Every structure is written in C-alpha cells, then in structure tokens.
Amino acid sequence: MKPLPRSTLSTRSASLFYLVTAFLLISIISIESAHAIPAFARRHKMSCVTCHVGFPMLNGFGEFFAGNGYQLPGADISEQLIDTGDEDLLLLDRVPLAVRVDTFFQVRDDTKTSNDFQAPFSLKILSSAPIKEDISYYFYFFVDERGDITGIEDAFIYFNNGYKDVDLDMRIGQFQASDILFPREQRLTFQDYTYYVTAVSNSNFRLTYDRIVEVSYNFDLTDSVGMGVVAAITNGNGIGVADSDRNFDSDEFKNFYGKVSFEFEGDSIGFYGYTGREENSSSIKNEFFRIGPDFTIMIADTFRFWGNFLYGEDSNARFSSSGNTGEIESWGGFLGATYPFMDGWIASLLYNRVKVYGKQELDANTLTVNLSYWLARNFKLTAEVTADLEDTSAPRPQKTHNGVLGIVLAF
Image 1 (cartoon, rainbow, N blue to C red):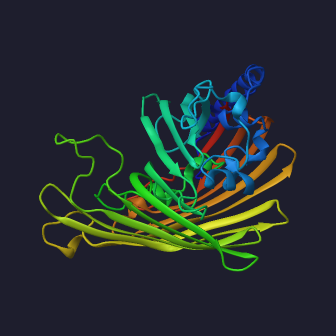
Image 2: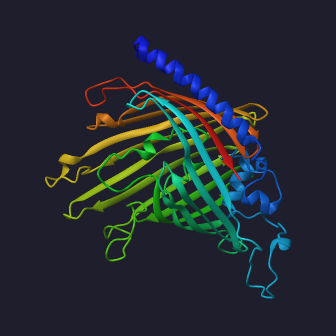
Image 3: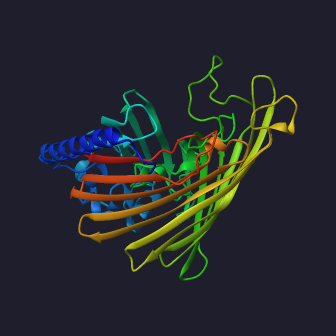
C-alpha cells in the first residue's frame, strides 16, 4: 500500500479502533438471536453442516442435494404435509422461508469515504419447496441490497431425473450463467470473482444473471470417473424489466453456453464455452464468446484448491458503425483455496486477474485473504483484506486496497 501522510495514518488508526470496537459489540449482541436454522435444515431436521463446509460454501453432499433438485431421496416429510385427500397435490403445512442478512464495515482508499458502516449490506428472503417428487422451485428476494430494493434474482423451477430416472435435469428461470463454473452466491469472500462481473463490452451480456433454460446430464464413465454435460440457451441481456411490447429479450438473438466436466474421487476438471450476439437499437451487432477450463482439487478431504480461466473476444464491443474497429480481446480468471484449519474456522485465499485490451481501466490484479469463524452453524464473523497488485497508470491512477469485517446470519 502506498505511504500515507501522518495525519491520514492517525485517522486510519482511529477508524480501525472504532471498527474493531463496533465489530465486537455487534457480535456480542447478535449471538443471542442465532438459534434457528434455514428452510432446508428445518424441513429435513438436520444441521447446516450436513450440506455446508461452512455456509454458504457447499460440501460434497450439499452439491448432491442441490443437484437432486433440493430433495433428499427417500426422505419422509409426510408430517409436514397437509392432508388434502388428493395424491396429486403436495402442500407443506407452512410456506417455507429463510432469511440471510449480511452486515459489513469496510475500510478503503479509493474513495473520499475511507470507512463505512454497511448495516445491513444485504437482506434476502429465500424460499424453496418440492412441487412433487423430482420437481422443485427455488427463489430469493432482495428486500435490501446496498440500501435499495433489488427484487428477485435467482428464481427457477428444477426438474430432476427427467427421463426414466436417468440423471437428466432441467432448470428454467433466472439464475447465473456462471453457476455451472463457480456459483458466486456460495463464495466465502466479500471479494467477487472479478472477470465474471467485468463489463468488457457495451452489450447487456454478462456471465452473471440471465433468463435461461439449462439442461444437464450426468453419467458414469467408469466406476471411479463421472462425466457431466450441460447445455443452455439464454436471452443474453440480463434480468431487466420487460419492454413496452412485454418482451424481456432486447433482440431476436439467443445466446448459448455449455460445459463438459469430469469428476474423479472428489476432484473435477471441466471446459466451459459461451457464445452469442447482440443487436442494439441502431441494428449494429456485437458477436462474442468466452471459453476456458476450470478445476477443483481436494487434498486430504479438507484443503480445497480451485480455479477458472476464461478467454474472450467481442467483435464490436463498442457497437461501432464502422465494423470491426470495436473488436476487443480479454481474458481473466481466479485461483482460490479454502482450508478449515480448526473447528469453526476457515481460511480462504482468492487471487483475481483480468486483462481487457483497449480498456486498461478494467484490468485487475488482486489478492484476497479471508478468515471466517462460525459462532453458530448459521452465524459467522468474517475478516478480509484485499490488496491491489495492479500497476497504476493514466486509466487507473489509484490502487483500490480494502479491508472488511462482516457478520453473516442465516435463519
């Protein structure tokens, strides 16, 4: 971090003192309210650790549960059902709801506001339930995100084992095109996966939220090696509101993505591809693609090492009327590691790298260190520091180091 004037250092020291004091006070006050567990755990009467290494990060069983349409095979939930006398109507005796609240205190050096209470940073209401065997819904609503009502983000219907108990699944609704790589909602760090959220072009296309129909098929190649194939079609312009004609898509084109992956003894490797095109209101087109590998490696069932690299091209990123003068190449990715080193403690590292040729202000090179402690299975404290390693330049005149202390509660 660059040297600071003595007066600034004094201000930062005072800010750090207030930060630590507030963090401890909020932690002590909040512990008493952290007794309950979220909707899935309530329904099946099991602890959060059944599915999570430490929420929201899933373990192997949690990934199986999500991939099985959020249903446990053979689970008896009859005591939670209303007896309507109709075998074709499955109704829980209460609407399944859960709540997640994230609160942070952030210190940063790239804005005039150098320290900030973000309480709450986000508050979401989640719901999921079976409609019948192998069909479920899932959604969440942001009641408050960064001081504003965001509305619904994830919202989909999940069809599991769609053909004669073959592991052929389908998801329809709005969710993230990068979920089949590394779901952003399950990361332990405040720091995001930077390339996924970098707006390389002027297109509405993102690797994040969109309206999608996604089909996946999993099968065993050998006794120890499994293979997965995913194919999807998407509007390609995010999850904004419908236009005056009540259309959600902004043009006549659809985008496509897919992935082929292999899993063996807890480790996995895969290759992802996304391709599409978009036309703006002046009938100027941009064609683009993103391709690259991802991997996850488990060591001794505790240390997890993972990463993703993507290369992309946009043929007319600025929607220039003169054609290919707007072509932009980009690449980016991340490496991450998590290690549960004591009961209730997880240490995480995340390295992000992004390069956008012709838009140097979008380049990123950061290293994040995170330490999380679970006071209860559904209540955690987190401390995080992100260092900006990118060289300063005219398009990027200042580094963006930041530190975060946070409280995350799921109920």
